[in-house]
Length: 224
Length: 313
Ligand code: SF4
Ligand code: SF4
Image (tube, rainbow over all chains, first blue to last red; front, top):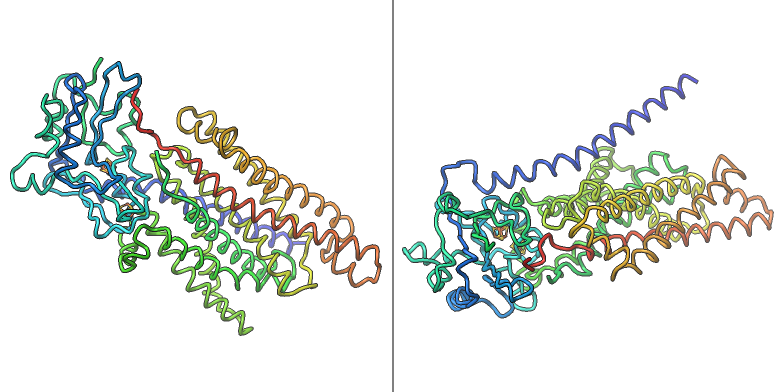
């Protein structure tokens, strides 16, 4: 009898142990992943600069010159769309949104990419994607809330996305989309400064996802 | 928005869980938790690594660059913050350990204890990984829940048990396992699975927004046939009823288990026929559990809706 008791107890203990291990195995990564990704993103130093876009919905006339300029400059492969002008329904409301990659402070794409195709530049916070490393697993497409990574499986089979025209910026130029915008609806600059602009808000308007997921470097001046 | 993860990913996640579950089944059988069945102690170990390896190869086919530039695959080991990277490590290690264990079993040598335990740990990690892969994606609200990996683990063990019983039946035909204990375990696993499925889908359904839209695709939308017929009815409810019936029947006829075996040895033709009939029903149930495990992953992957669908309000 006592033997059986011990056995039962041992078994219960084992079970509890296994369950705890399971919970830890599942729970710990979930919690630590976000932290890990923040660290990976190099945002520990609040000093590091972060460039971002500002988009003024009251100024945009839906001419799509930003997207056109981007396409010509960066030669998207057919089927890819680095920058896109979204139009709200019904179109008569004239509410638009020009969006590309938001070079997030906490990029979900970068956290999930198994091959480290994404890197975040320290000097300006640009989230760069290295197509030469990308294996085309499409994980980042699911992770990015803004549909920024573009993947044409039947094409190159690797992801491409907005680079913030990093090369042009390195030579002192402006991003092609910003240069092309005739009304000044699309501008760029240090995101901390942009956020001080009167009327500028985080991109949570118009049904966009919560900014808390990736902390995107984009501010919108919404059309009320 | 266009979905990119298709069939091959579904099969990959399914096979990962199936193989790992098979390993855990033989591991449990080896500890005597499933009665005294030599077939179960071997079958799972034989099939675990090949199943997982096959699934992993499918993943390579699904990658945009898998066949074009295979040398890039080495990069899959580089980002420790990516669950997919963890998965590649876990799968690779599990396949290696699984193959060595299978070799010992094949040579009829004793498996080194540490190796066998390590394999079990890796098998469990494999099951958890397949669920964690989707659970950490915040931009897919339907996936983004702690319960998802738990469901994947339970389902993996359930399908692994079934495939091991099925294969064990082929390699050791006529040598019956302890149907009583196994049916009881099946009953528990499927019950938990039903609770988890009901929980995940009803919570998502009540959660509003994209989450609810995802759940609705399964409950009443384009995936409804898969969800209700193949997952709920055939994959869960029918196996639940069959295992409940078997537990009652076998529990009554012989508590010590080996009831069918006993019947076969008794020369009692009626008992023998009944026993054979029940054995066949149990095998059918096992096949349904495997099908259900596959459909579960199909529904979960294909019900994914992004948090923002690219329309403005
Ligand atoms: S917008 Fe998407 S792709 Fe760009 S940095 Fe943020 S998460 Fe990554
Ligand atoms: S598709 Fe390419 S960039 Fe995206 S996560 Fe996979 S390897 Fe990384």
